[in-house]
Length: 233
Length: 233
DNA sequence: GAGTGGTCTAGACCACCAC
DNA sequence: TGGTGGTCTAGACCACTCT
Image (cartoon, rainbow over all chains, first blue to last red; front, side, top):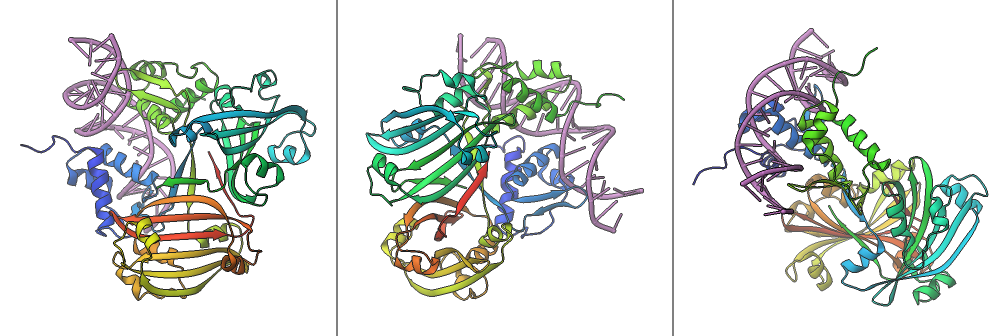
C-alpha cells in the first residue's frame, strides 16, 4: 500500500475546508499564500489556485490581489434552484404528467404586461392559459404571454400537445430570466381549475424571459395547494 | 493599435457561447475536441478546457470522456438564491431594520421537530419566536428551534439584541441546509404579529441546518403579505 | 483498444492594489 | 513598488467509456 501519487485540487480544497470548519483558520483569518500552500501540500501552485478559486466561488473565501486570501466573514450562501420543465417536476415525483391547453388568443399587450416585459404598447402577443396535471390531479395553472415578434413561429405553433414552456425551451434555448416567488389567494377562476376553495393560499411563480436583450415571454404559475419548492445548499 | 496578445479563457467561453446562441452549434451538436479548438483559437488546450468547463458547470454543455462535448439539449437552468440575514434583506431595500425577541424557552423537542431534524426524542431544544421589522412594519415572523447539544453556547447566549439567525451564522459559520418554500394561510397568532387578517396568504420558508452531519437548527419564517423573493438566471 | 476530457506540473508574465 | 492572486503555456499522464 502506498499513498496516492499526487495531490489533487480536491485534496487541497477538502483539507482547506476542514481547517476552516475546525477553526484552524477562523472567520476573517488570512491564509498562507498560494505558493506556501503549494509547498506544504507538495503540489503545483496552479493546483492550489484551482482549489482556492472553487472555495471563493462558493463564497467560503475572499480573495484579493496583494491582500491575500481570507476566510469569508459573512458567508453569503447560495441556494441553487433547478428550473426545469413542469413535465420533469411531475415525473421526478413518480407521477404521470398530463397537459391541457385551456385557451389561446392573439391580442394587443395589456398595459401591465407592456410595463412588466418592457414592450411597446399594443405589441401583438400570444396569450395562453394552460393546465398541468400530476396523476390526474391539478399541479399548476399557467398564464402565459409570448412576444410574437421575438418568436414568430409561436403564432402558428401547435400548443395542443406541447406545453408552451417546453416549446419555448427548444425554440429559445439559452435565455436570461428574472423570476419571483410569492404567495397569494386563489381567485375564482384559479380555484376552479385547481379544485380548491376561493381564497386558498397558493404558491406562485412569475418569470420574465429575454433572449439577447429582447423580451420573449412572461408566465405566471399558480401551484396546487400545499406545493413546496425545495433546495439544498 | 494591435490585438490583445493572448486568447483568454473568457474569449473562448464567449465565442463558444456566441456560436451556440447563433445556432452554429445547435442543441445536441458535437463540438470539436479541446485540441482542435485550442488550435483554432491559437491557445493552449488548458485554456479551452477552462472555458468549456465553466459552460458545462452552468449546464450549457454536456461533457463526457471519449464521447466529446455537446450542447446541452434541455439546458437545466439554475436560479441562484442568496440566503442572507434578515438584516441584510431589509437594508437592501433601504429600510431600517429592527428586531424583537418575542419568546424564549428551553423544552423537549416535540415529535414533529424530532422527526424533521432527525433528533432523538425528548432532546433538549431552545425554542424562540422572534419578529423582524422593516421601517417599523412587520417583515417576518420566525419560529426558531436550536439543538442545544450541537451549539451549547446557545443556552446562555443573549438573544435580546442579536437575532438567532445572525448569532448562529457566527457560531456555526459553514453549515449545510435544506430549505423549502411554500404558501400558507396566516393563523391567528401570526396574523396578529403580521398585522393582517387571519387566513391571509403568506409566503413561508422552512430551513433545516446541519453542521458536520449533526442537526443544528430548524426555522420557519412567515413573511409579510405581498412579500416576493426574486432571482435572476 | 483508442479517443476524449480531466488534471497536474513547472515556469512565466501580468494586473491589481496596499504600502 | 513589491507582493499577491490571475492566467496562460507546453507537455505529460491518467481515467473513463465507447466500440
